[in-house]
Image 1: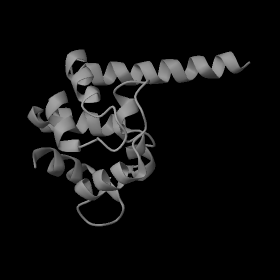
Image 2 (image 1 turned 45 degrees about the horizontal axis):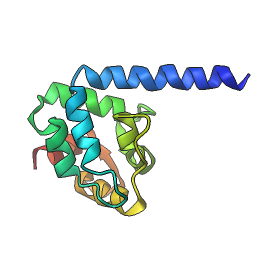
Image 3 (image 1 turned 120 degrees about the vertical axis):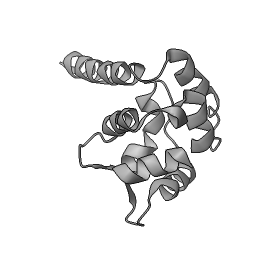
Length: 126
């Protein structure tokens, strides 16, 4: 019954997409993903501008944070960041280690190796 687990993932992933599409347009998401298709080309500042995250309200950013924080720990850890792009499209690539570490360093305000809600808003406004 491998079919049922795939279906579960699909409904989970598409509910994810749905959650983000309430905040971002498909065109914005497509533009963001296009800006970083090649390995090691991901730049969070460029990506945030392309998908329009830099112009969202604190509430909307908090919603996006909640979507990215898959284990509901209140933090986005390195593993979750690695799969950051997949939250925007199931077919997107995972970030490389270098990209993940740079992204983490940008949002990790207190050096604990993860991004808290405050870090999320801090680095989207930079």
